[in-house]
Length: 194
Ligand SMILES: *[C@@H]1O[C@H](CO)[C@@H](O)[C@H](O)[C@H]1NC(C)=O
Image (tube, rainbow, N blue to C red; front, side, top):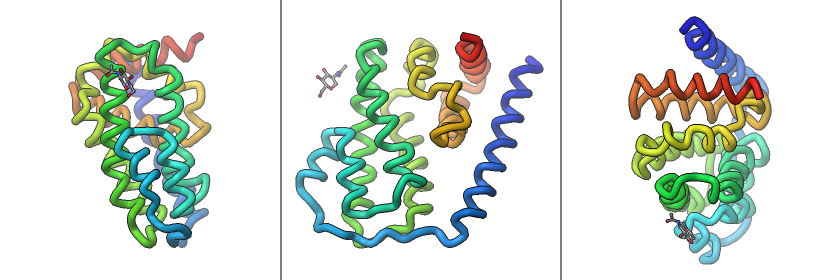
């Protein structure tokens, strides 16, 4: 019990540090201006939930490696696809549905002539919450917890900006069922011992 509360405190604290550092380094948030026309092939990738959409998007509106598409969108999308077969049938459907949902949500941003990279990243995380809940995350997170952990590797908590992802996952899980948080953190601890 103590350990659980402790981990949550650590997560929150580190998150505050991460956010304030980000603010320090990017005091003026970059704006991306469209470098190419809207490409129908990109839009097609988006509605199919194909991970190639993120780099297609990035070619038109380039925010770089500190922002959503390069840092979170594409790598986690590819990890989900690479490990998809290890998930339960229901969770595999969740992966398909949530990727399609994300593509549809981000398509509107892709079609803009410019975007603020910080605002876009923030909105993409909001979209992720909506898409996860809409695609049945609550129905699969407990049974497939170990599989999800192989994607959101807790060993990499301090790399790849995994902290921001974890804050979001814990927030969504809490929304699903406040009690399930305990099981998730327990699984998290067990996987960290390996
Ligand atoms: C997920 O999508 C892939 C490719 O579109 C498809 O082959 C697979 O059957 C889908 N899986 C589920 C569980 O819906």
